Length: 156
Image (cartoon, rainbow, N blue to C red; front, side, top):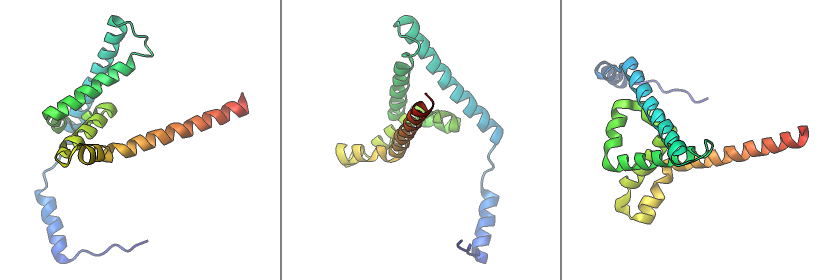
């Protein structure tokens, strides 16, 4: 194991000063806002799913796909308009509900690098954050499928 370097007196003074002037975070209001926002996003997703079932005659097992697509489109649109950032600033982790947070991360990276061109800027940078998530998800699905096949082959 590497030894931890001792802080110099100047570094200790700086750390103490930083601790004094760092704003204290109010955990309970942050948790409440995250819970409410995440819950509202999920409630809206359920509403969309019910709309697709009742008005567009989707089966219950199929209605989640278009509802997810609508959430992705709205998240990317709100990111492009700058609205998502304001919501995320207020709600914190509540906007990290997987599908909307994922869409936001891709859209914001694409917007940030658009000046570098569409291929190398937008295309090359929008998957820097999302790429590992896609790779991990694909690999996890592969491992689960192999395990399922092995269990099916052994146990019947």
